[in-house]
Structures are given as C-alpha cells and as structure tokens.
Amino acid sequence: MTNKKETSYPKEKIRILLLENISDAAVQRFKDEGYTKVDKLSKALTEDELIKEIKNVHILGIRSKTRITKKVLDAAEKLQAIGCFCIGVNQVDLAAATNKGVVVFNAPYSNTRSVAELVIANAIMLIRRIPDKNMAAHEGIWMKDSKGSYELRGKTLGIIGYGNIGSQVSVLAEAMGMKVLFYDIETKLPLGNAKDAKTLKELLQKSDVVTLHVPDTPQTKYLITKNNLRYFKKGAILINYARGEVVDLDDLSKAIKDGHIGGAALDVYPWEPEKNGDQFSSPMQHLPNVILTPHIGGSTEEAQENIGMDVSNKLFNLIEKGITNGSHTVPALALPSQENVHRILHIHYNKPGVLSEINTLLSRNNINITGQYLKTNDEIGYVVLDVEKGVSKKAAALLKDVKHTIKTRLLY
Image (cartoon, rainbow, N blue to C red; front, side, top):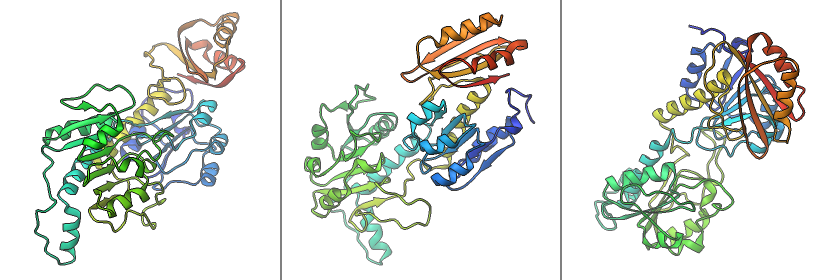
C-alpha cells in the first residue's frame, strides 16, 4: 500500500539508485513507503559510468567498491544523500559531499557480530593449525598430529582498536576462556576482565593472538611492519579484518616463512579485485597456516539485512522528515514530528549572519516560524524551519536567495 504523500516532491518522481547488490531489505523499505523508482544493480559503477547515471538521482546507495569522487558529485544535479551500506565511508569524497550539501550515511554497527564471530573462528582454526591439516587431507595425506596445536583457553588475545568490533571480539574471547589485552589511541572502558595495554609494544609482546580492528587513517597505514613484527611472540597468530593497508604483507610473509609468526588470517588487502571471478594475487598465498578470505567479514545474510534496514531507515528519515542523525557531512540533527505545518530544509556555508538573514527575510514577508532548529560544523550549517502551510512555498523560494545558501528543500 502506498502511504499518503509526505514530501514536496512526488514520491513516484524521486529516483533511488542502489549499487553493488545491496540487500533487498533496502529496496523493499522504500517500495513499502511508496517510492516506485528504485533501481538496483548488482555491480559497482566506474567514475565515468556514474557521471552519466547520476544526473537525475536523488538517493544513491553504494557499498565499498564504488568511488564517489568530486567529479561524480559535480555531475549530480539532484542528489540529496548517499547511503554507504557498509561500515566505512572512505570511498566517498566527504569534503566534496559536504560542500555540495549531500548527506552521507553508513551502518557502523550492523555487521559487528558477523566480523567478531569470524575472528574467533579464525583464531581457533589457526592455533590448531587446521589450514595445513585441511590441505593435506584434500591431497590425500593423513596428518593426525597434535604438535603445535593448542587450545584458545588460557591464551591471551591482543586487540588493536577497541571500538565496536574490537569490543565485541573481546566479549566472545572471554567466553572462550581467553585473557584479553587491548590497545587504543583513545581511552576506552574495558568490558569484562579485559585490560588496557599502555603501549602497542606491550600488547604485541604479551599476546598469543593479535587481531586488528582499526580505521583506515594515515596513522594506521602500515601499522604492522617488520619493525614491530619482531615484538610478536614466536609462533603468535595475526588476524587482520580491519583495512588492507594496515599490514605490510611482504614483511608478514617473510615473518611466516622464517617461522617467527605462526599463522595469519586476512580478509582485507591493499589491492582487491573489482568483482567476483577476477584474478587475485597476494604475497600471502601458498604459505603455511594462512587463511585468506575475500573481504567477507561482514558478509552474512543477517548482517546484510541489518545494514539494508539501518541505512535505508536513515535515508528515509532524511527524505521524509529532514533528520540527519548519523550523517558524516551535513550536521547531525534530530527533529520532532510536527503537525499542520510545512518543513523547510536549508543547508548553507557556515558564515556569520546567515541565520539572522533568514529570520529577517521571513519576518519582512510576514511569515511566521513555528519551529526552528540549527546545527553547524566547521564547514556548513543546517537550518530546519517549520512554517505555516499557506506560506511555505513562498518561504522556500525566499530562502534560496539567502547569501551562502547551498541548497533548500521543502517538505510537506
């Protein structure tokens, strides 16, 4: 059933483009709310393809492969928001999106459990040296041997990055009987009996298994190299389900060949193929006790459905209500529901005098403001105005001429 019209622009004319095989839960969410122009593609688009496609798109949904550059944003004449149906937003030029007043959302928590479970599973497989035994069995060789095979119970797990995923891994590890040590550049409250390592070196020296859960920043690029691999316990395990350039794979490969590192599980790489079936190459291939997975840490049916619902809800709240909670560009603003008024969204550069000009302009034209909400960041400001229905179109037209305006939109 199609709901009554909630926006100033007819729902049947709002174009929503979802790329990279985003969950059908997102598609259904929009269709249930009366949005009929929802296109879903299974692949990512190149910059040139996006430039051609995005001109009349109002809402764009992507995952991690699609790159949203300034050129793409410059070609997007009607774009209101980008939904990143994944944890990160590094695939979007956030500075350019901010300057265009394009709201960028993501789903930072929805696949936490999926990643955490797989980290623990890999720790079990590697500390038991299952990859080698599995390969031998496939080749017809019987390797019934307990040498170098251990239990997780009683071992120390070192977690680098104690955020949403790192802390969830911490809880699961303790349930397995492990001791947990974590290191983070920010002060974090330990969960359970986890302890805070004072330095990265301390964590590496004390851990039997080290798992990485840090963001992609200049500070984390090549965080793990030969310079600190030497601090690992001999035979320790390394797991990277964070970002591809956090670990120098050539250095890790050598440490495994030398026998200093006992095994590794990797899900992310400095370079990854564009699509399924493409050739993949890594210096970690064909090494003993190594598990390589194709960036599927969060790829479970449950996680994809949760991500689909989370991001589509954020996009829906923006389109229908002007709510920007969770935005990485336009200031995050929670808004109450209002009846018998029309709502105007005004995004502008954060310059002195804009709010004063808005209020003066509306006052001179006898337009009564029944509700006003404002939030700013360093670059832009976001003002939401609730005005009487009979004058809303006039008010929206007036606000388009306010100095430093980026975009204005009228909601019903």
